[in-house]
Structure formats: structure tokens, C-alpha cells
Image (cartoon, rainbow, N blue to C red; front, side):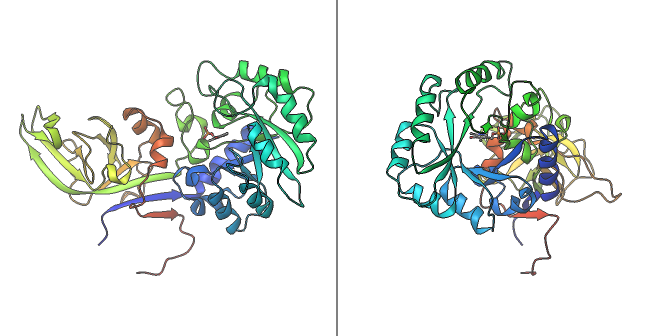
Length: 380
Ligand SMILES: *Cc1c(COP(=O)(O)O)cnc(C)c1O
């Protein structure tokens, strides 16, 4: 029997989240951001549910090829553009649109031989100071691109550093507007946080939005807003089972380093999930989990293959009980009621990180199924 751990990707949740994004910015075209293997969910697993998007955005050329292999003939955007000249050959062959964020990429385009001119997204650095042309250099870049026979349409984009926080996007939007107002081309500004928090602002023109995390059902500004406050549903669930039970006396300790000591008689469940599965080792005692749909918490250190949870107040739980590390339980309770789950945002916060990192870190050793299953798999 395989080890009792399972990740589940919920296609209906993905569909719902995409519809939710579209409803919050009804006039915009939507890039479904599927970089990093669809934030750890698997491009092939999310593709069908997200094909109602207007395009797919990612940055790895191999991933772009995978999206084309799935039969997608619509737009694909390379968010970091070409890394070397020959990448442009693949852009020509697969009709990939690509970001241009520096002079070197314009140089590459200028010597690229193509029958079909490329659609490019010219990126401004509006304060993040990662990729993009300085506002003062933006017009010259646009002019240079516009003169190239290799270039078809030029769209204008930027990426916000603070769409999820107090600083907000006002200054970045003002900079972007000031240096682009008389340039033609479609605009793409908003990531998930900007769509949910700011897309209705008057000056945020959004021909294309670029949601990632919201599609996967995590709140981009947790804990200010929980995912359900944004009407988002978790796309990824991680469930495992209890494979051992221990009874502790006061003073007994749990796990490596004896970092947790019982101050009373306790029952401890040992769960078949550890950091080698992608559960963060940094999650301290007290991180929320669900056992058979009832909330409890972790105790002691997370180890490679196991972690431990408090079952003291869950007398009915024991060997084989389902443990939801994040997302929703896989099994409904016997009364048919959908048991509660644990939001990945809560687990991430407890571990001092963000849901993005947990999703991306789901380990390849964890078997993944999709729900609802597209067809019954052959029993193996
Ligand atoms: C990753 C990324 C996004 C999506 O960001 P989320 O916070 O996941 O919505 C949008 N635009 C760019 C340029 C990105 O790199």
C-alpha cells in the first residue's frame, strides 16, 4: 500500500476562482499565471479548469511548450521574456508573446530573423526595482521597439511591489501613467492583490490582468482578508493519515530535540507527512491541522517524513484518521457533512511564510489526484 498521503487539486475551485476574478474586473482580459508549474499544482492538472482564461502567463520556455502541447492556441506570455537570443526562435515557432524589460532583449530582437513579427509587453520599473525600464528610459525603449520590423504590437506593463499592503499602488500607478499616457498599446498592471483590492480604482486601466495566487484560492493579503472573504476556494488540499499514536505523561517530550514537553497527560497522533513532502519544517507547535475534520494543532518539530498532532481532545481519532494539513478533507464525514478544513494561508502564517511558497514546495513524492476525477483511472 502506498504511504497514506495525498494531494488533491480541485478543478471546480479553480474554475470558481477564475470566474471570481473575472467578475471583479469584468472588462479586462485575464492572463492565468501558471509559472512554477502552476504554483505547484501542475500545469497539466489545472489547464482544463483555467482554459476559460484569455491567455497563460509563465516564464519558463519548457512550460510554454507544455501549454502548447496541451492544445492551447491562444496567447501565452513569457513574463521575463527571452533569456538568450535563441529563445526568440521558440517564440516565433510557438507564437509566444514576451516581455521586454531591458536593452539587451531589444538587441536580441533586432538581430532575430522571423517571418512573423512578435507581440511584446514592454515593462516599466515602477518602484519594485527588479525588472523593467526606468520610467525615464521607457519612451526611448518603446520608440526603439516600435521601429523594429521584428515587432508587431507593443503592450505596456508594470508589476506592483505593494498591491497587497498599506503602501498600495497609488505611486506606482501615477508613475506608470505619467510616462505612458501618450503611448499607444494595451496595458497590463494588476496581479491578484491589485485585482482584488484596487482594480476598481479609476486610474488603474487594466486591459489585461495577471492573477496567480487568487486562482489557486489563497488570499493575496492574508491575514487582512481570508480567502473566503474574497470568495476564493482552495484549489490544493494536502491530506495524510495517522500512522501512530502515543500516550504522554506530564514531562514527556515529543520529537527531535524534545522541543515540546507535555504539561498534562496527552494523546499524540503521528502523521505520515513531513518536510520531505513539502510541509514546512518551520511550522511551530500550535500550527492548525484538522483530524477527521476537527481542528487541532501540531506539537513538536516537523521531521522529514512525519509530524505530530495533539489528539487529547479527539478521543474518537486514532490510527488511520484523516489529517488535513491544508485545504479540505478528502473524505466527507459519515453524516455527509463536508468537514471543515485548514486554510493554507493560516499554515503559512504560522510557519512564517506565504501560501505561494507552500504550494510551490509540494514535493514530487506526494501523489496528486484531481477532483472531480476526469475519468476513472485503471486500477493498478
Ligand atoms: C507571478 C506574477 C504575477 C502573479 O502574481 P500573484 O501575486 O500570484 O497574483 C503577476 N505578474 C507578474 C509579472 C508575476 O511575475
